[in-house]
Image 1: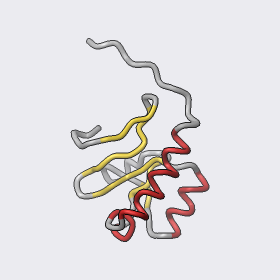
Image 2: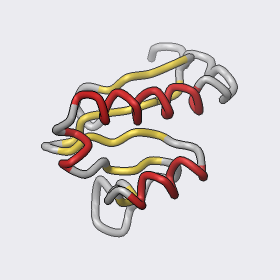
Image 3: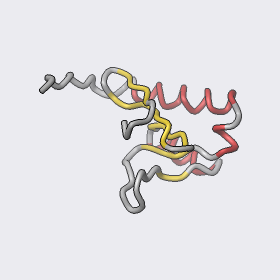
Amino acid sequence: MFGYPSVFLNGNMLASIFQDRIMVRLSASDRQAANAVGAKPFEPMPGRGMKEYVELPQTVSGDARALRRWMERGHAYVATLPKKAKKPRK
């Protein structure tokens, strides 16, 4: 995604590195909890936010245990989404 490493589960993007930032896909309640610790909506370009994704703050991305907990929350949410079918190669 965007030329940066990304993690997918059942064809759905779960998390990605974008420039020097880490973003993760979360449920609505987890996004609220993430905002409380300093996360913000992920926008690869200003004004072009990606629904359900938050950019984790440095306090989380720099702490392996905290980062793992947010990734686990993202994993739990993305696991509930319907599996995406692979698109045929052109």
